Length: 63
Image (tube, rainbow, N blue to C red; front, side):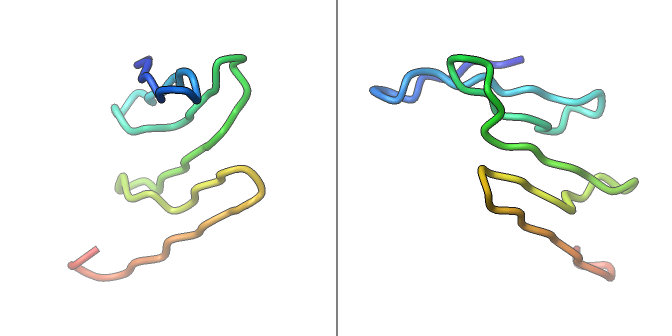
């Protein structure tokens, strides 16, 4: 875990998975702010931030 200072917004805790990829961002109260999911090749395929979900689907050698 890594803690970063967000100025007046307080601190956020960054949680990394076993592959050293960002998996979660938590606020001061340990509430989930963001969550990232990855495919088997390590590319981020989904990011959930509040009520917004973003999917990525890059195919080919330039992903």
